[in-house]
Length: 483
Image (cartoon, rainbow, N blue to C red; front, side, top):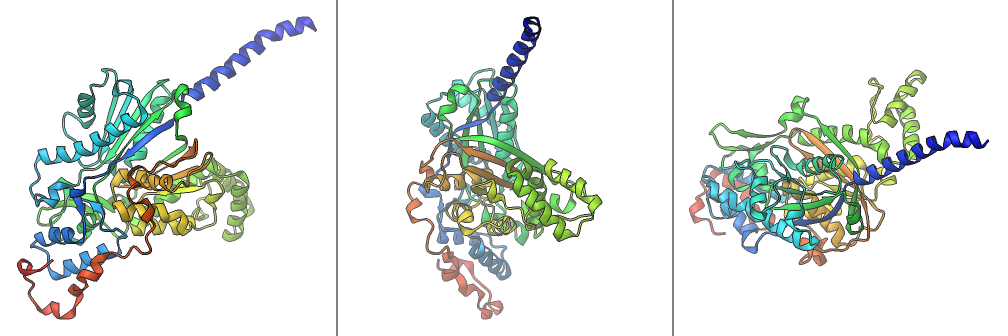
């Protein structure tokens, strides 16, 4: 007996230390968020109703038909009159912005949020190991990451990545880059900076599909700090639990629904087509099909399986491949159409909060309908859209900020972040709240007034006269219009 024990002892020691090594490695690969800082634009860049109309009327190429379209779009957009616009546009330089103007717009957002981030965390720029910057429409040389490194005099061995063209879902892509690097580099601190350049890409033509972006996109951005240091775990606010990225670009309709193009007159801008919401739903379905088994309890997946069998009339020989695919995140039964969203999966069984990209009212409505979310669930996204507009890749963090300012986030809660962007991409992730959160962040001056009694845009009240029938027979003189 003693001899047998002595023979097994080396094996037991080896197994124990191997298991310990795996546990320690996995701890070092965790991705924790230490803090995030959203950009609070200056008051002199606020875009209220009157200043917005001045910008519209500067475009003398617009006819009555386009003006009516703009009014209808703005009124139904879900955006209020406290959003912010680049100085380039407010100062009337949208048709001929300079490189200096673009740098000033981006610098203000990046450096303001980074200054606040370093101040809030107490971590100095010299301690940063990984830096990721995403700005889709501006890619200068040297890169924006190099610009930040120069400004803060970061170390020579900082790992820098500059992402462009990734659209509104770029924030989650940046986080994925950081978490993948954390698997290789232990005891590291990473930063992701997400914003967009709007001033140099303001559309000055008359194509309705391209005018939509002017109505939706506004100034904003965010800087986030992450770590895999066990010593900093106690300071973390969130822990990344799951990440799922879906690229739906092989579908021609999805690829073309959100694209930077030139119109017939040579004016460049962002074209948003009617198929955007459809493409978003398709990409979201594929993404959640892969993510659902990782974030939902087994009993919910089983319930969904039997509901799907009953709904679709699936044959017995198809059940096993479908059930296997369901739990692996793949639908092996191609003949059977199963809608993960409207079909019955209840994501609230594994998620407490839904951080939906505030891309527009139609997008928020579509996600809410598909996931069967309540108005309480969608309130953060709707209020972020109303207060800040669509701030592109930075938009998710204004939504998260609303949840935190409203003291919704409690220790142990899980947050599903849903981001959608050009390409077409759907990049989602799940966070676990590490402690009760109540920081008011950029919402501190207005959170008490949200949600408002109504979010009716004042454009309708002030300018609904433009829909009067008699104006179709009158030539409008913009120079004499009183605002």
